[in-house]
Image (cartoon, helix red, strand yellow):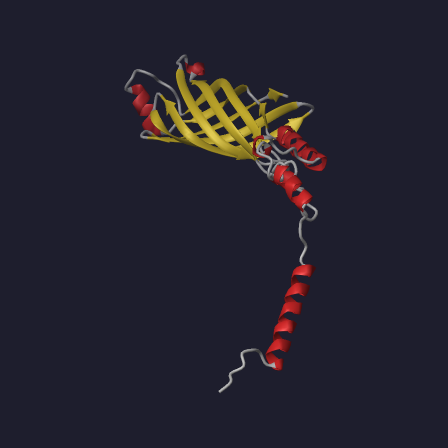
Length: 238
C-alpha cells in the first residue's frame, strides 16, 4: 500500500488565509523604531501637578476657592450698607426713648390719722391731732421705654409729719408704678414710720404747665395701727 504524506488543497488554502490575516494584523499595530525606543528609555518621568484650592476652577456660578479658603471662618462677614443703616436707625430710636427723666422735688400735704394711731403716739408721750401736716422731698425717676407705652416710675418719698404740733414724725415710702402720656399715675410699695411698717399705695395725676410739673396724689398706708390717708402735692422743674 502506498501512503502519500502531504496536505489536501483545502488545508493549504486555510493555512494561507491565516498567514495573510496575521501579516495584516501586525502591520496595522503602531510600533516604535529602534531609535525611538532608545530615546524613550532615556526620557525623564514627569507627573501632573496635584490640584490645590487656588487652582480649582469655578464650578457653576460659585467660586469654590472661597469655599475651600481656610481663613474664611476667621474673617467676620461685613453687613451690607442697607442692613447697617437699618441697625443704626434702630439703635438711635432705642436711645431716644430708652431714657429716664428726674422729677425729684419738694412735697407737702396733710395726713389723716386713725384713733388707734393717735392712742399709740400718746403712749409714747406724743400728742397730735387726727390731722397732721407733712413736709419732705421726693426722689422720682420716670423711665421711658417706648413712645406709645406707659412710663415706669421709681419713687422714694421722705416726709416729716407733725411739725405744727412741735413733734417730728418721720416716714419713708418706696413706690414703684407707672404713668401714662396724660399724666395719670399709680404706684405701690413698702412704708415705714413711727406707727410701724406697712404697705402703701398712691394714685394721682401730674399737670405740666410751662416747664413746671405739679403732682397731686392721694396715698393710703396700712399698718398695725390702722389706715392713714394722705394728700400730697409739690412741684418739679424740667
